[in-house]
Length: 245
Picture (cartoon, rainbow, N blue to C red):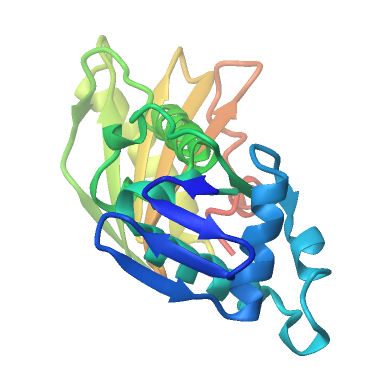
């Protein structure tokens, strides 16, 4: 039975590599696994099916994977592609080599299956959407001077952001109000606070940033008022949004 560059002799339980002219007298586990894959060639065999063929002492997922790895090693780099792992299902022994489409991936992605690669792309797209939702661009935003707020939990850096059409006096007035509310907090849970009031005080956009145990954490908070007023920003609102503790 031809398997790539190798000849599988079932009667003699040998696998012979015709490229390097080597022959392998196969151990029982490897022989049983390959013989069953050959019998059901081009069909996916589950790990459970293959495990049931092994004796009790060898009936472990580790022993099965070890046998698969040894078979691939002897088949050689090119022919080993015939023995494919199907995620969460099992293994399949192909009759013919697949078209060389897997070479589009290189480096750390080279051994990644199509399913895992698709999942990675989906996660990256979700991350891009998440970042965009936090840093949603606004027209002509202008960061003003940083204010250091001394609180009971330490120094918090406050950055007011003005929007097009807002006067410096209005921004400073709104900033003073927000700083007063922050100073009244028992605990401020963030290191940096970026605040933008817009749409006639009906919408407040806040970006929070802090250094956590696993790196930088960022959170986006939006406050919406039915009337043109900033008075909804009080201690209860700051605690409810997770800005203060």
